[in-house]
Amino acid sequence: MEQQRILIALIAALVIFVAYDRLVLSRYKRPQPAKPSAAPAEGPTGTTIPEKPPAPASALAAPRGDADVVVVETDVLRASITPVGARLADLELKAYRRTVARESEPLDLVQPGPVLPGTLELSLETSDAAVVYRPDRTQLTLHGSDEGEIVFVGDRDGHAIEKRYRFKADDYRFEIVANLADAAENSRVALILTPLPSDRPNATGQVAVALDPNRKLVEKQFGDIAKGPITVDGARWAGFAVQYFLAAAIPQSGEGRAAFSMTDGVPMVRVDSTFTGNRTEFALYTGPKERDVLVRAGHDLDRAIDFGRFWFVAIPLLQALQLLHVITHSYGVAIIVLTALVKVVTAPLTRTTFRNMREMQKIQPQMAKLRERFKDDQTALQKEMMELYRRHRVNPFSGCLPMILQIPIFIGLYNALSHAIELRHAPLLWISDLSAPELSAPDRLMIGSIPIPVLTVLMGGSMFLQQWMTPQQGDPTQQRMMMFMPLVFTFMFINFPAGLVLYWLVNNMLTIAQQYWMMRSPA
Image 1 (cartoon, rainbow, N blue to C red):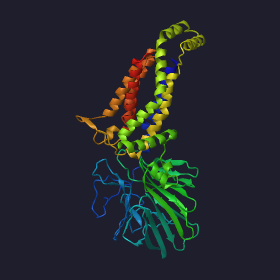
Image 2 (image 1 turned 90 degrees about the vertical axis):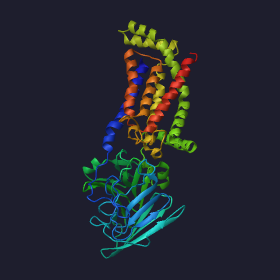
Image 3 (image 1 turned 45 degrees about the horizontal axis):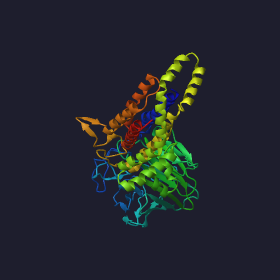
Image 4 (image 1 turned 30 degrees about the horizontal axis):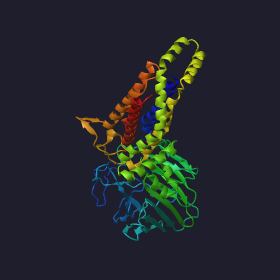
């Protein structure tokens, strides 16, 4: 009976954790809508792009002006830089599509929009937003190990200003170096960012992020920023993050400071640095939140991925998933294999627990007699119960061990799959996107006009069968409560990433097979 109570408590804790994350926290992770633009976005040829949903205009974005934009082409991105303000007009990630459709255009992390405060805020009052720069070239193409730069020269209030963009062919991180004639030593300068467009309609909401001097990730919802400016002194980097992508400015000289604020209803992040002589330098990372890529980019950018308290479980599981993908060439198959490997590791403990549960089931009649005999003396009842356990060599708490072990694995894998950009648009059978909830996948199975979460229904059915096959212990009320749990989990898992549902389904099926084998084996 005691192990049943502990087991129910553990399951209830897991349900509360998941429900709180999905039903409460997710509501506060939705991006604050930016003030809409009156004019439609324009593409490189000036034609409208109606198929793209409206997105917050980025302070990186600027009008193209009369002059031609400068196009940068590398192995991983394609960027357009306008001479007006020497700011980004487009930045497309070649390896990532906007939607799951194979013909979808590359994901653009900078949407054209109305003029906002410039990329470089040179003082508290002025910026280079209106400066018309003269580029030293109109195109830069880099491949392999190539590196290159574009130099923009302009005039600001009679003072020469120069801005350099430095790119590497295989890096999402590039540098912005500014030289301003007559700049005061140690005078402050800020690089300004505004929200990224969402990578997909159902993506987890956007937050402003910064890494403080103690390597602690600071995340602020847009609602918090709307209440008043927020500063992070000594910030190593700061910017905006959506579920799978990050734009972060990294001060390269002087002590950094990040300031989150609202301007005309649009959240903004200012990353401060200082002029050393007439020069200041920033690095800007605009790319995927892929852990290996972020680690290579340096500056502790990998801290932008929050794997939670069980990071020591989540990171190895993610690395194992990546390794299995190299072998199987399918993340769906990799999840199945990973689940089987985890099951093999935990199989001896599960077998011991199942045998103990069968022994507990055998002594249920004796336990019922003891409860009736000592119903008015709990101390004597507990003493007789412990003696009964000792005689039959049964541990009433061993049934909880698999659940205790499963909780960190489940939460770790939950965080790993929730942040694994590798699963974005990864298909399996009828599922087109293992990172998305099954109901949001564009090719979900339909019966009439009703979308059917087949994978989730199968998972719930397997959980019910597993519970039905488990040796029953405790009083009938607790047994009925345990049989109700599959329905609760099925309801919650509808909004889970399909990859996580796949893991849970395979895990249940393997557990059922193991239970069936043990039930047929000698006691």
